[in-house]
Image (cartoon, rainbow, N blue to C red; front, side, top):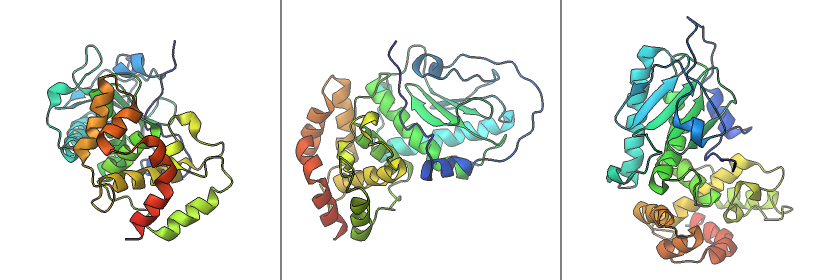
Length: 293
């Protein structure tokens, strides 16, 4: 059986885990609940997370948990729906009938778990898994990580497949950008980018973000959260009027082309009008010029 990979799998030191750690505090077990193992993640992820059998349905999401308090689930599923709706609006997307759910699904199944392992936030076809440590999670602290994974969930529903066809740099760049409403700007100066290049001078890929087509392309010992800042910057460059001036709709059209069987490199060229090979070779001069404006 082919191993199924997650998008936006967060098990990393540094920035991503810091976001998840903000969610932590001790909870108390009020009662033992039976463990249910239904959920699309059982079929389309390596994780067989359980829940207590009391999911709450919203417009776009269906929220499961093992120990999140049941009255809090209503607020949480409404919150997840609002975030997903906002992500769709950023893509100017309204064609929800286009979504291709896993067989039997009609909503994104979100499992917020205190007890399941591993300690991750990840998206799969039709589902999002997130570890929390509070029986009443604070939505303000959940916001970025949840939006990041819901952006991946959105792409899965457009492609309609357990395995995404986009390059890692592209899909993670989309998730960072749309999760933060374009406000994550830690790589926001020429000096920062030059420092990044100096730090990666001895790496085989020189830290080139476009070289990360698959997860295996990260050089050994990579500071992956730092790569994410570059992925985000690349998406900003593509859609900024001071960069390539493309639209969110054109980025979404890349995903639609992949749905029709087009390879990512061809879909990228169709929508962005530059070959992926040229984009990779020119990315640092392009980003330096972009940041210098």
